[in-house]
Image 1 (spheres, rainbow, N blue to C red):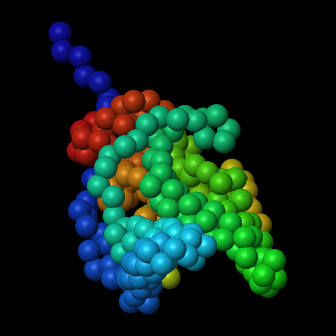
Image 2 (image 1 turned 180 degrees about the horizontal axis):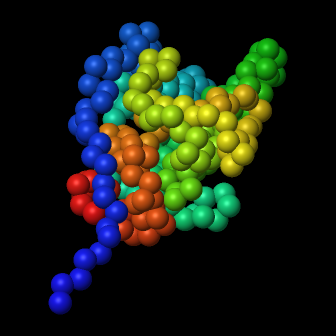
Length: 265
C-alpha cells in the first residue's frame, strides 16, 4: 500500500547573494574613521615622547586620548566601513511574550566598540569637568546614550509563527505576518538596512525608549551577527510560505536556514 500525505507546497523566493553589492559608505564617515585612526597614532607618539621627557601627567592624558580615538576608529570601521558579517549563528529562543522563534542575535563586537567608546568618552569628560565645566553637558549626553544602549542590550531579531519581533537599540517591536507588505533591502542615512513596512494590526506591539521609533521594523545590517543576506532570505521565504511558519518554533527552522533548503517541503 502506498500512502500519500498532503504536504504543504513551497513558494519559491529568489535569492540575491549580495543585495547590498552597490552599497558605498559615506565619504565623510570613511574620512572620520581614517582621521580618528591617524589621531590615535599621533597622540600615541606624543604620549611616548612625554614619557621620555618625564612628563607623566601628559603621558597619562595622551593614553586616555589614544583609547578614546582608538575606540572611535574601531566603531566607525565596524559600523560603516566593514558592515557585513558572514556567519550563520542562530537559535530558537523566546521573545518578549515567551513565544519561541528563530532568533538572530546582534553583534557583540559592535556592542563592545559602541559601549567602550561611550564609556571612555564619558569618563574623560567627567575627569575634565572641574577645569572645563561645559563638558558636564557632554558627559550627561554620552552617559545617557550609554545607559540606553546597555538598557536594551542585547538586541536580536526573531521570526515566530505569528510574526516578526525586533529588539533593537531604541525600541522593541512585534509585527504580525499578515500586516507585513514586503521585506526589502535598502539604505538609510548611508547605512544598509532590512526594512519591513507593514499595515497597522491589533496584534502589533511597539515599546519605545525615550526616542520615537519608526512604525515599521528597520534592522541596520551592521548590527546583525549573522550573514544579512541569509537573514533577508529567511524573512522573505517564511513571509511567502505561511504553511511552513510552524517550523519557526523548532530546530527545523535553524536547519533549513543554515542549509538554505528553501526548495524542500
